[in-house]
Image (cartoon, rainbow, N blue to C red; front, side):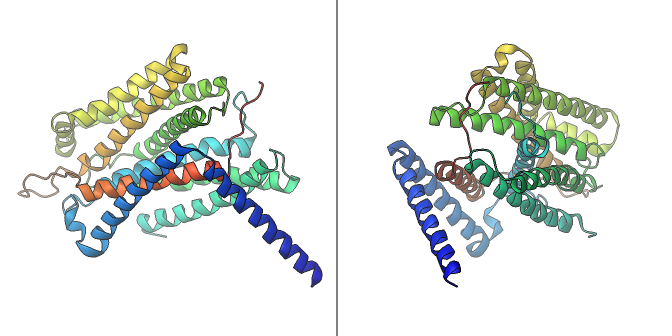
Length: 368
């Protein structure tokens, strides 16, 4: 019992030291850091208040959604963030899974909900060992290294085969929506996820390095990631081209109606999506496009263009009426909807900024 008590006291003392160190790290971060955190807290409060209004006080009537367009801004952002996080995770998991160093039930809705919970469990388990190894100077025990590797491989396969491709199939199974009912959609979801995930990784890496004044990864690594981003953008555009070609010339009323909306009322989103991805891909094909500034611009354009694609995929697909005589259908997001999404983004940004101070995962690049 005395030995157990000593171990218990030692663990408590270690936790206390870690907590004091974490608080000191945040306290010493500087005035600018604290101002940013304060702004994020205000945005989070705005989002929380709006969410409470929608869920418990005034109801979904204060949003732009309706019985004709039930999926609005929430689903647009949901699909974007799920895809982006899955794509970024796939790239990160390759490091532990394969030692890759780049130059250094019956309802699909129930099924997808279960897969998210399963993926989160696997990812949190892999994250535990990844953090443990990193805090030990990058060299963990044999058991830690093996667990990180196999959990990463498992999460990689899980994300590809169980989460994201079936996520696209969830839409593709809906025969009533011409824009969704295509066998290319599951594969398209995977390639778009990889493109947006890589773009966000590049963007965050460059921004974090700029703020912390540390070289997180080598320029060669970022350049290689830019090449991968160009590749996945090219594959996505290839599938988009034939999707739109079939939609335009198949002669199906639903496809022609979708094409009409894409090239008239929603032409700005359509051009932002297609021309944005194409320009980012071409930009990255040149050496000067894979410099730090070039990569920052290309990744920013990619993120915006894929957001536009998600808008087209979710919103435009619901605009054509399912039954004759319904009349004109439209959707415009309201301020409470936007506030909730801003609050979610602020929350994630807040956690990222705090955790990178308390539990830094980035190791400054040294040497080759």
